[in-house]
Length: 277
Image 1 (tube, helix red, strand yellow):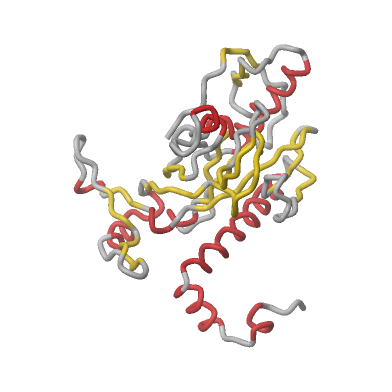
Image 2 (tube, rainbow, N blue to C red):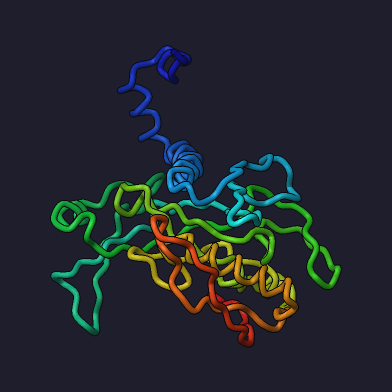
């Protein structure tokens, strides 16, 4: 039987739990890696994708926390997790059509955040059925040199459009369940950082992105909706129907795993610019 962390560090479960609870940065790091592992576990369980792997974290030229093969094509998924101190729950009882009230999960105090007592009653009453909103940091762990399509280079922590295919936002901090919101790389908001020239901003993904539960555009709760769209785009490219100025729109919902899979029907439309935050 493999040794557990309790064995390796010679500590009790209570002590380990307390250390993680007292150190938000450690908790966030653990939660981030757990999100990657849980997403892989969920997708492996579906049995619809294969050849799962993770590229080396220290290879700055390769982005993608989870690489998978779907319908014979390899896709890269970047996994990010909510910042707990941005999480808010919708107070349905005290909201109106003109004035929505949101209760923050963590109150920011000097030094560190503390649980907001207003949050608990709504959580206890509505919990899994409540509406949530929050933000996650969407950038690289450190600055590195990136190359834009025009050949220009810059040093930044921002991620580039095109570095991966799908963004998976780990939403555990909302409902304390392993929920995910998925968005195409091309549908993410662009950076608004005035420190970069306009052309470069359009090529960089925003470093802070908002997300909700239930998911709202550009996020969806079903990754296969996006994988089917990407597969359809690749097939259309092979037939010469797609250029940089067009995109593919999937015209039918993806079938369930228990159904017989039919070829997705697509149409080519003029491509829209990425939304900006």
